[in-house]
Image (cartoon, rainbow, N blue to C red; front, top):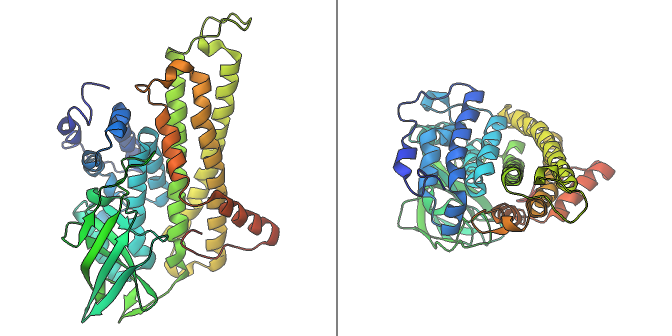
Length: 414
């Protein structure tokens, strides 16, 4: 750990862009993301072990301007496309998978009003979060029971509990989803209120800094005007509304890829400096980087990661084109084709990412299992989140499309 990290001297790092001009191009924003990643990487292992709520980490994202990367330029945002912000998620996840997930989920929830909201709602929410540099979390877990909504005049009242709420205590705004008379309703509310109480109980194997614990919702009120996509209390459906799952799964692909890339980069650096040749195999190599099995192993892992990156880049361009096109133009067929390709990429990066996160121990050597090295963090992070929804169902979606030319029906997970 360096002398100046988020753990040892957060203020010095949080203020580093105070006198620096904001980036103006996609390339400059990616470079800014790399600056943030370099800061996060310096003490990622220590922060993971501490398992504290990532207030400093989120403030770092805010101060760097990454939180408003999708926001309109008219309100101070970067106005970037989705293919660019997905690369930002990937860059951050190379250094810290938890913070990559938090940022990716934030982007999805920041776009949620575009997915389901009316034009006035879109304008209001995007101005609110962009102008005020606000961070999103989401109390939306489909495997739990829905929040209950009741009407009280011109207001909706939300009650219930969610066992997972990514963003939790570090979020400024929270997305709620509940049911009123069998109709699902999304709303965005301020996190800091008496009716939203986080359990602070997220203590899992990996992705430990995502603030994904339980939340209790008690009498949280929202004006009917804030019910996303409703006009005069009637929902206005579009195929575009169902892009929430493909967009979120594209976020998954990128922080999975970032974790795999981070694992490979860290292992390579360790091997170059520390891994020794095996003296009993008859090869008589002087250094670990000359060992044939180490060269072969890294060649195999790099080819997997590079191939996955090429596939994910291509598919990110597709989902970006769809997300930025006029909402009324999206067809069910096009939505389904994009969802299948995102699922196919997810299959590859989970398999290959877990292979990378496991194989690196064989290539770095026994001493690399020391806790201070921290190679375990990559497997733990990827293994934890890749269980979000069963991979066999993604395989079935792809197989059904290939064999029967059928697209997946939109659900909470497809």
